[in-house]
Image 1: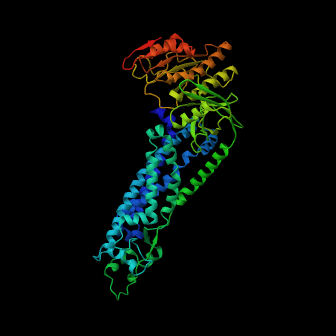
Image 2: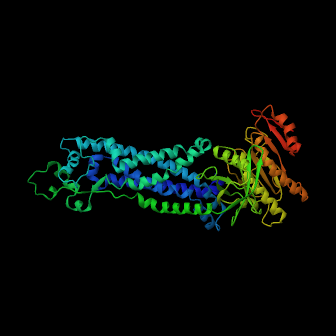
Length: 562
């Protein structure tokens, strides 16, 4: 718990502040609309549903103000640069931007449900009060429009008007329906299943946020919910004059005989979202400008397991290890941008990405580059983004955890370590790399054991959540980097083998063949794997030391060294 607080105290503080502000806004405005005397007559018709609707509306405005900020990538990059004097732990919390974005979105969905249900009760009570003829206060208030068309409190002026009619013909009702539908589509299409299997659905429905914000700004313009004006409050205060509305005689000469006047609650949503929307517009303009800068594809490599490597150059492009870029290929889609981790090292004169076939867009871009003949398909690049992982070089012992194609950031790290080692970089404290790919080793007792006492600080860097049980090898006191790679099938090893082989060749040529050692663990079991290992590895020319490859038997506490 102590280590978690050290690493995540800033995230916890932001979360606590966000929750605190939401609770404060909801409580404050709920009590305000439930007790303020300006809404005495409004509560006579609507009851407590008024407070529920208005309190949730304030929280909706607050979270709508926040929802765009975590996806302003250039703003986050600017903040990282501003925090350069602060601890890396603080700067790395900015990488949780999408988690916060999702959290705010879920809050919007919940608050929208509360707001919608409260207003459905309000419409039903408006309708009931309009049709009432019992002389009660809410009935009298609903008939005030008959005497003066400007002195209405109940927006329903006819006994034939239905709740459905108000919902689909008034500005607040129609925009409310549109906003709710847009939010439902955005939230449901953001589930992990949709994003992984139907990314285009997620991408296009997420741009309904434009309709959401337009509807949000227009939603309160009509001002259907009203309260007593300040001037009218001074003349006919509801606490002393409410009874005169019900029992007023024609010859009444009391000061309370004057009927109260009402005014609409001014629209305020635009005040909350104006600054974030303008900021996001500038963000998109900057993205468009950066995307128009020329990108030259210098090399295309097709690796096994249908993994495409693109090596590119762009004027003024600077990167650090662990960062990522957004890529667009107009030949595949004009609008879709997809993030890819950079696999090149900052010391190289190009930047590269590896694209694995994992959906329609990735399959199309791979096919496009495979089929290209004379002219290279155009690529647009925006970035780099993300917190650099340069702190991995500042520890004698570091542990890197990746999964499948998620190994890509560590390709950059391994290459950068090698270049720095060759250049005798004094900031590099790691002197030897131990590469240990693995997948879900927790069930296999005896393989892994957490070492609580290390001779030097230990840095944990992983793009995916690490398993609950992780092992540092017994000889962790030596300056090393431990590289854990989660793999369950042979295809996952194929493309990364090329990178390891090239590094190994450079090391051998420099007389440093022992700089990189690795142990490969394959957890997905199939009867064809043994023959694949005996024939396939030789056919592909892979060099995997006999003592460094293990087959783990699922459901059993065993391993099979080859």
